[in-house]
Image: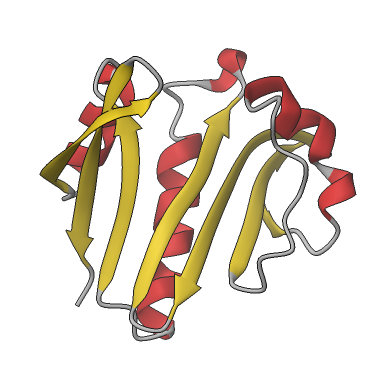
Length: 133
């Protein structure tokens, strides 16, 4: 079940399992959703909507629940929200060596539009964009 998170402290320990540097955000444009099974957080997604553009900040799914449609359901929820907010473009950066994530985004209509050299330290990143409207 997908829930909108208003209090980041409710999912912060889950998030830090995947992104230790995450300390919460004071970004007024950020939306956080989580996916729960039996009141246990098994996935989360953070995205920001700024006028007609949106960015995926973070997305993660517990290892035991990967390849079971959790990320897809969160993505579809976010996409519906973006359409309701008249967003035109959805973008993200992803490590060029993260083949699983790249394939997920390509499957969902994103296109690689640029390479960000050394975006992740020694690893390059792809800028990927999805035309929403």
